[in-house]
Length: 240
Image (cartoon, rainbow, N blue to C red):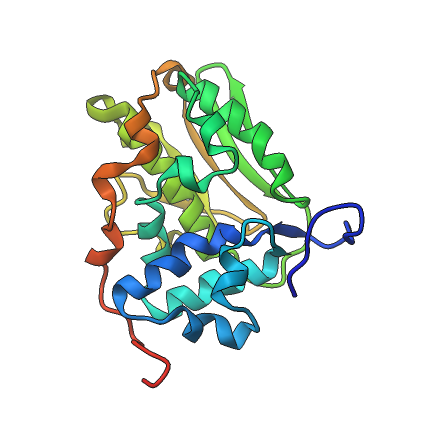
């Protein structure tokens, strides 16, 4: 069921904007899978997912991501995450595009995203030489969020990689996710550590926060269409 946040919404339900699943659903046709094949069994349609005004339960979004992976490949969602235009995808993307540094960007993002979900807290914490960007679920999950987390952490690791450019050092990054196998084998040299499914975290040098943020790093033009290189899907149509 689609719900909207507002005065009449049951705030006890863990809700998130439905369009968070938009990129992986949109990418399905590029590999020969009709979105309806994934969404129909969940009682959803493409218009509901793409409408930025709609909100779904977190577990429903996790089901979408899991179904997309089952219809394509284990690392499909993560690879789509690597190709996302952050200005178009993230909430208040135009405002985020005005950030001058990585630190400015992450600060703006954690403030903006607080209105995108009533049950997940995303934060940036700096302690000495290390910065920690993390997401924490404030509810008990009933569906694995592994594919969703693979998509989201792929966005952030790829952004760091683009901004750092030749200064990139994967040994300086510690990534914790619930299922490292959902990430590509070659993930910018980063090896993920398994953690509990209540969230994910990325640790990197706090000095990186001062690096200047170029517009093209957010728009991500060099990886547009990256999912076209992914393994062919297991199922290719509703009639398969």
